[in-house]
Length: 267
Image 1 (cartoon, rainbow, N blue to C red):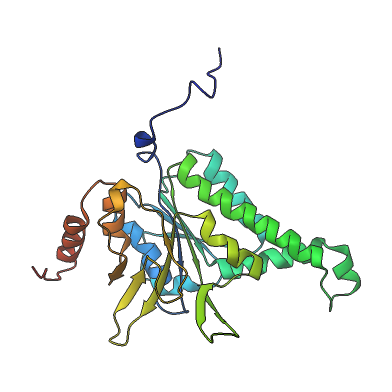
Image 2 (cartoon, helix red, strand yellow):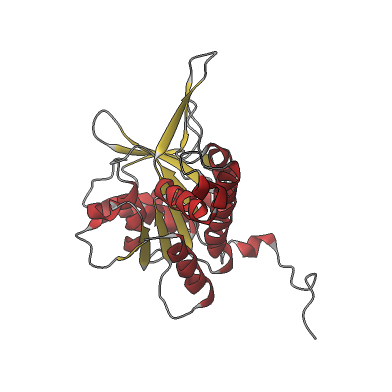
């Protein structure tokens, strides 16, 4: 007899053991988002890494012979890769990186444009339903890849550029992911971690995991992640995965990472 859904229920405490990381890294171009995502290769809970490249950002990791890259040429490429990752057990990938979503958003719009008859009649005035179709297919794609972290235990990392918006009343500037307006409002709600990456005045890279100064971030913390700081300097996914997947404390994981890089730990 087929097991009923009620019979398949399991303790919430056991679910996290099988889940992978799902994370969205965004920020200005050139701050090291692709490099940070690629650092999963240096973790036993992250290797092997597969990067789906739409912008040529992999130039920053061109020295790495241990990371595989697929150049995405069109929307069908994204769908076909997803289907293989979801259905096949032939590959050893533990992490998939979509680099970057701002470019994939344009790929989606072009795909919707090709299918929209009204746009073909008047190419200078794209129809509203074209953008609606693009938004819907982007939303489905984001959720499909995100769900690989739940269903297959993969780490799924999205990257994108940043978008800024000024409040006409207060003059305050808010920072969010660079997507079409409808998707900008929804992207953060679809993933567990929305992190902002920047380079400080002293040249040190910084990863912001918790909300500050109108920068949109999100960290859906589970019990393992309470000691991960809201801001990390010189970030790497190695200690984060050691905490979230390996059950280590942040203090130990980060100290081990620093020692592996030859960095002295300050007590």
